[in-house]
Length: 120
Image (cartoon, rainbow, N blue to C red):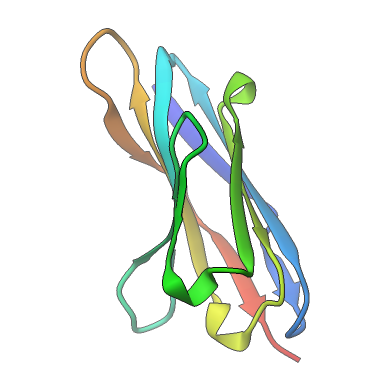
């Protein structure tokens, strides 16, 4: 079984910073694409950023220049550094990863979510 566990959420003032972490554990053969999504109250879940195993990244327009995604392949961990946070960044942040548990194709797994609240 594979688990993704997020940490690092919390309450921060506008303009502040937070760093989210997400570690994948379990019977893992390999981890491909990892990413972060978020869901604000009353809104659909949206993609924030993704990163390939080789380190190629892609970001939502709303976070470009403020958020940075990175990963540590040895630890099966993905990070999201969030700077210059805005109230509209308030949401539950979910990490996801395409994980191979055997020689078959990778399957998607999701974390339980961590709350980020940006408010003065």
